[in-house]
Length: 462
Picture 1 (cartoon, rainbow, N blue to C red):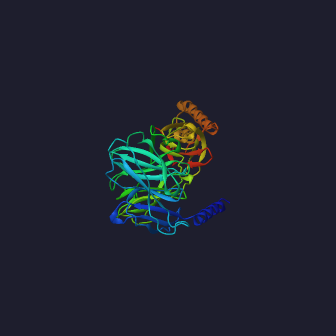
Picture 2: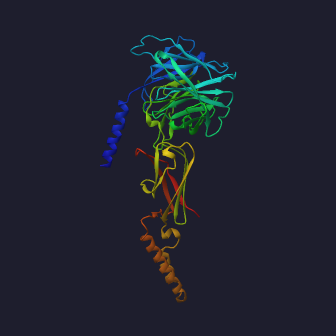
Picture 3: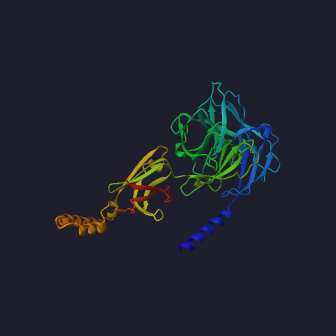
């Protein structure tokens, strides 16, 4: 029956993948030598990334040199024109998505609005991240100087217009100011309004990281702060930094992510999928290399909630001390979490729940480090303790009469230990004969959904 169920599950998975809608991705360039304009990449399988086909559909507008692009729910693409010397002034332009039933010929962009992000200051600002949120707003990140990062948003209007631009305060990274080199990248939202930010060193072969903040942690005023927490170090399939720039991040309709790398060596759009533990896995090769040399940002219009990773673990450890299994772990962030269930196994395959710990996160959400610990009585076999009954019996036969009384007492003690082991409390956990247990943590959210951590091994302490 189990084999039949597994077969049906696999069949349903492949059927659903085959029937999944295809995605459309939009990209924009900031390298005039690589060709100006916006590209439309169609027919992308959101599960595997297969089938991508590219076409340039808006190449005639010379204003289209940008590193910040977003697709709004009004059917218009918005982007910020690139102007290195700007004194804090910037211009947002829009262009109708094409082709559509109402836009059948190549459109021309228009100015949506112009604003100044720093008032009396004449410091130049850099605009490299832009994304639409599920509520319809478009968010922008702004660099001023070497290490000041701001968040802002505006509201798309009819016909590609825009209104209500507002600054939303500073962005911090892991509780501190961003490093001076962290200025390139992109942002993206899932269907729950949680924010993902790709930020990297502004150099080829530089470190790149995807950060996260829950919707509840996004600032709503210029006096606030949005604190991003590191979630995933971006590496190629070989486990090293990409040789080129990591510049774009967007969400697939399946809940996967698209990641853009700008450059001629490893450039292109890659797919980020996730394993059963919620960890990201980079595709071995790009799903599209269209305009890879000049690609500076990408955008989609999908908002699946499945991109939410309920818990990011900071570390998990387990050990056996005396007669107790001790498990310690920390979380860097929690979303909609309710509790943790601790499971153990003697073979690393069949796991049994041995305890539950409720979340410490307020209302199940946290962007701060939280520490947890759990202990449980364990039963270590007598043989593991070096006092086997067979050994005691053999020794008893070999000793002289004078010491038989002493060894008889030892024999009784051994029998007692064996009896205690056989009649252990139901709260105790059996330990493997070599004094180790396999341990994992199952996270359960408020909707009853579960995610499982990696497995760690608990050894008996010396």
